[in-house]
Figure 1: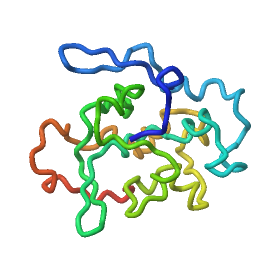
Figure 2 (figure 1 turned 180 degrees about the vertical axis):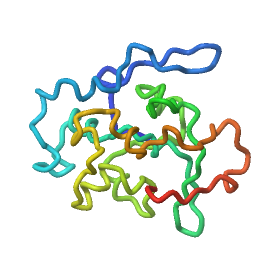
Figure 3 (figure 1 turned 180 degrees about the horizontal axis):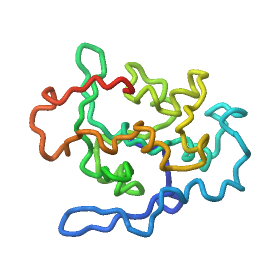
Amino acid sequence: MSAKADSADSPLPDAVSFAGEYELEEAYDPESRFADMSDVEPEFWLKKPLEQMNKREWELLCDGCGKCCLNKLEIKGKICFTNTYCRFLDKESCLCKIYAHRFQKVNDCRDIDISAIREKPRWLPKTCAYVLLDEGKPLPAWHPLISGRAASVHESGASLRKRTIVNESEVTDYENYIVEWEDL
């Protein structure tokens, strides 16, 4: 589940398929999203409501944690996160391997738009920049827009990198994988 993007304007490369597996193109550098910010107003997230952000600003809000790509269950009206992840999530970069084509390949992949952010029960993690800003809260110090570095989300422990997560292709009973991590 990620922010809306046209394939031509996607900040992520097309994935390369090898025998049914997908890998991010090695040329992609997650830091590149934050390298040249001359086309966006400094601290735009403090000056504009979400509804007024352009596509580039919207995409920059994504911290790259990967938590929106965890599988979730709705039990008795409550969203329960699991530690199982979409088969197209790259565990190291915490990015989608097929970002530009995710809606064609994954039937239940969700677009992160205003209605998704405000949906109840909440299915986005509580650390999600879209959720935080919509609730009038500040971005955390580890957010790449604050730190100026995409790697800060991983260094802080806020991403899925180095967590115990299981590829959904290995799971039959999602109820056995429910987690209650503090940042979900």
